[in-house]
Image 1 (cartoon, rainbow, N blue to C red):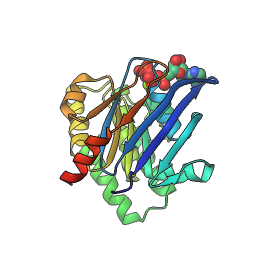
Image 2 (image 1 turned 135 degrees about the horizontal axis):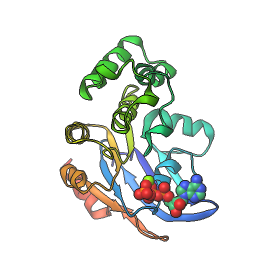
Image 3 (image 1 turned 60 degrees about the vertical axis):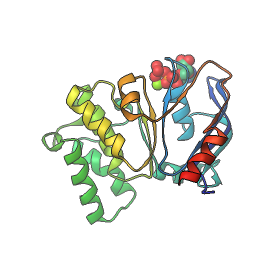
Length: 230
Ligand SMILES: Nc1ncnc2c1ncn2[C@@H]1O[C@H](COP(=O)(O)OP(=O)(O)OP(=O)(O)O)[C@@H](O)[C@H]1O
Ligand SMILES: [Mg+2]
C-alpha cells in the first residue's frame, strides 16, 4: 500500500483554549482531492490553519509518513503544502503583483529558469498580465483572490489547501479557477460553500459538523477498492 501524503489521526483543533473540532481522521494520498464543507463557524479555516501550524491542535499530523510536531517540521510542511487564505488581505503583502508572485519562489531559492516558467504559466492561466505592476492593496477583491491563488502556484507546492477559492469571483474567473482545480494533478483540499463548485468538481466531500465530529476518511473498504483499481 502506498504511503499517504498527509494524514490526520485523532486530530482535534483548538480555538481560544477550547476544542472546536475533535477526533478527525483524514487520510489523503498523493494526487487525491477532497472538499471540506460545513456551516459558518464550524472550524473549516481553523482546521486548515492547524494543519499549517498556525492554530493549536492535539493528535497526530503526519506528512509522508513523518510526524509533524516541531517548528522545523512545519517549515518542511509549508514548502510542500501551499495555503491560500480565506481572506486575501491576510496573505498579500508585497508592493506589486509581480513582487507577490515572485516572493515565494525566490524565498525557496528555486532556479531562475524554473521560476520564469512557473511565473509565465500562472500569469497566462489566470490572465494576470495587466495586473503585474499594480500595487496589490489597490486590487479589487476578486483580483486579490486570483493573485492569492497565483502566488502559491509560483513555488509549485505538492499539495494545496484552498479556503473558499471561488468566493467573490465573476463567472469567467470562476470557470478559470474551477477548471484549474479540476485539471490539477496536485493533492488538493478545497474548503468551500460553493455548491456549484462542489458539483463541478465531483470530489469526495467531508462535511464538518458540531463539536464532536468523528469520521474515518476514506472508509477502509473504499480505500481498498481504489487501490485495487490502481
Ligand atoms: N482567532 C480566534 N480566536 C478565537 N476563536 C476564533 C478565532 N478565529 C475563529 N474563532 C472561532 O473558531 C470557530 C471556527 O471558526 P472558523 O473561522 O474556523 O470557521 P469556518 O468554518 O471557517 O467559518 P466560515 O464558513 O465562516 O469561514 C468559530 O466559532 C470562530 O468564532
Ligand atoms: Mg472559514
